[in-house]
Image (cartoon, rainbow, N blue to C red):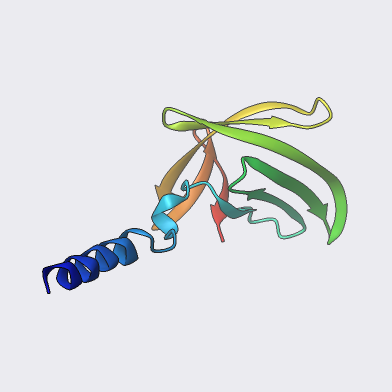
Length: 114
C-alpha cells in the first residue's frame, strides 16, 4: 500500500512540474510592436521572437518601404538589437506610458505592444 501511495505522490509531482511553459517564461519584449505615431500614413512594426531573432518593417501609405531582419539580446534592463545588412545596432528599453507597454529608445517612444 505504501508503494502505491508513493507512486501516486511521485506521479502527481511530475505532472505539476512538467506543465507547459506559461507567458512568464518569455521575455517581455517578445511579441509584435507597432509604431505609436499620430501620422497614420507611416507605420513601423517590430516582431521579436523567442529564438532571439526578429523582423522589422516600415510602411508608408500601406506600401512597404523597408524590410529587414535582426537579432536581439537582453543586457541588464535594455535590449540590444543588431539589424541585418549593416543597418546598425540600436538599444531599446520597455516602459509604461498611460497604461500601455512601450518600446523606447532613450526617452523616445517608438511603439506599443500589440
